[in-house]
Each structure stands twice: as C-alpha cells, then as structure tokens.
Image (cartoon, rainbow, N blue to C red):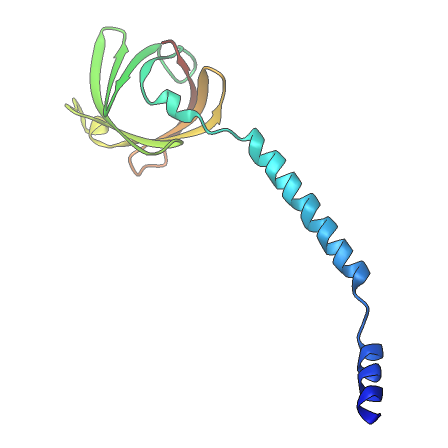
Length: 144
C-alpha cells in the first residue's frame, strides 16, 4: 500500500501543463504560417538579369549606356565608346565587373555591384569601384 500512496503524491506534485502545451502549439502554428506566407512572397528570379540587353538612362551620375550581357562578357556602349568587361556573378544579387582592356588606371580596378531592389523589368544597384570609398547608385532597365 505504501507504494500506491507514493505514486499518488508524485502525481499530485507535478504541474499540469495542458494549457502550456496548447499555447505552444498555437504559437508555433502561427509562427510557421507567418513564416511560410512571408517566404512565399519573396521570389528570387533575379537571374533574369544575367543575360540580355539593358540600359542605364542618363541622369545625375550616369551617361546613357546600353549593355549587352552574354555568359561571362558584358559589352557597354556609351556615346562613341564601346568597352568589353568580364562579369562574374557571386550570387543573384552581387557581381563583379572588370575591364578586359583597361585604358587608364581607374579602369584597372574591379567594380563591385550589389543589386538592392528588384522591379519587374529593372533593378536598383550600388556600384563600388575597387577598394576605394567611391560608391554610386543607379537603376538598370532590361530592354530585351
């Protein structure tokens, strides 16, 4: 009989966790549904900007430039100038450009481009030249 009494005492001293369990289940259900719904809105299709014909319109910081991208080559046309650059994609949001035949010391430095925001047919970017503090922001539009 003593053994039966001890079991009753142990059962009575344990806290009841039914409400806590239900709360945890509800919390994780809400959290996972929120995470999945937010994740569904983020669609990474930025690889559509890796090939094609693009344009940077003339503005404060840029002259009008037409860009043709194929594989690891980018051809940039601005005014009467045509430059060929190598392009290396680190991921869908970061790439490096380097002039194949640099004409001056500034063109010897690589350009690091980060895609900041995607739009339907364009993206906003930040460019940094070499390891300097120089940065510039702009928008590239996909033409073809």
